[in-house]
Length: 133
Image (cartoon, rainbow, N blue to C red; front, side, top):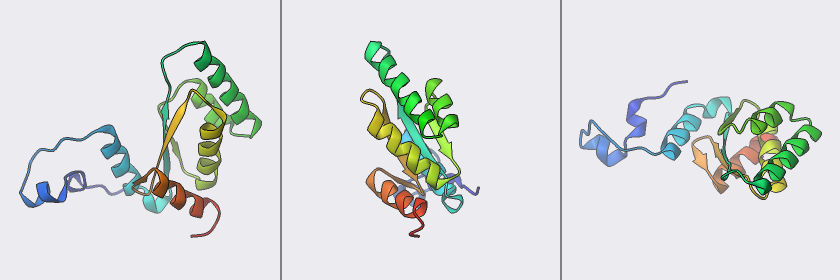
């Protein structure tokens, strides 16, 4: 993985010779996914709401669904409420992303892939997972 601190600075900041910049977690995850784009690494950012009975039921249902689809490692990490899941396999990432997004009302997920987030990341991951790129 090759990443330069310059990639974390906006172009206008870099051109102006800035020595400091502000980042949020999305900036960092996008930069990480961009640096790992050639290795086709996907990052899922898991969003667990405050704990209540509905969340526990949803979490248990999701863990069972993931296990039922053979995603045992993902199920274990979700049961531990891991905040970021990093995948080396686009096929497994695509499958897990859709299971999480479709099988849980209380738990959210954001996809980062190849320096992209949201719908563009989904399209790129879909293409790689299904051999269209």
